[in-house]
Image (tube, rainbow, N blue to C red; front, side, top):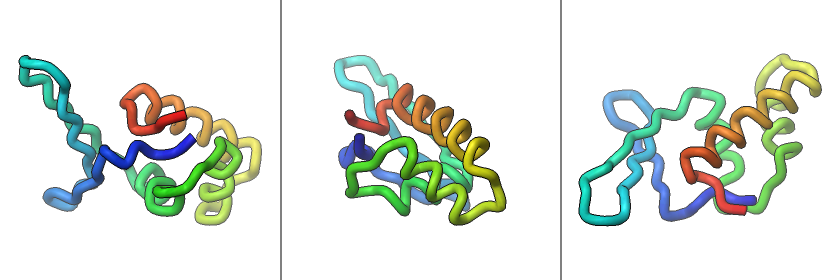
Amino acid sequence: MRFDERKKVRTVAGENIVIMQADGEADMTKVVALNESAMLVYEQLKGKEFAVADVARVLTDEYEVDEATALADAEALVASMRHEHMIID
């Protein structure tokens, strides 16, 4: 999987956000905020192919967390980013 390069992270008023433009005629713009952990993962892995284990490694390298917790958090983060169409398989 990899991050969709069409989605750009911007910093606005100190918040890291992704602005999702909807396709079609209706104005369905959506803004997604990235927390510190999500932004760290994005910065470390953008432009690369990665797996859930790579996301977990980023988390264990940065935070004092055991591998099982990091893996569970990584799975949840990837699922959330997939739901927001930030990740392409």
